[in-house]
Length: 74
Image (cartoon, rainbow, N blue to C red; front, side):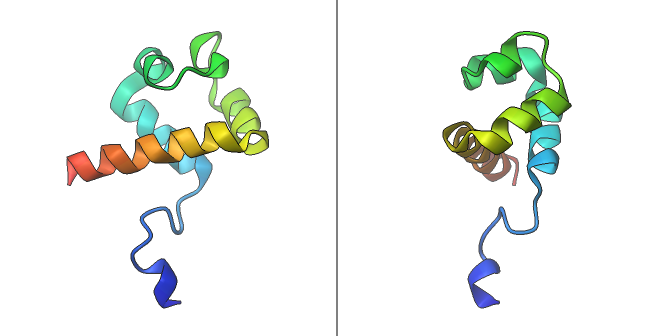
């Protein structure tokens, strides 16, 4: 249990993280920061989540951007 206390991703779903980043940046800026086609061409939460769940490198980029963003906001 103590391993998760300092993990800012613990308890955060991929959907929560994506929605947070969309609120911060919007699709256009998110597509510039992370070069992923599903953020740049006809983006939607559903299609992005499908892609991110299947593609570990892309999910890692999204999680990294989330961590950078929350560290700047707090």
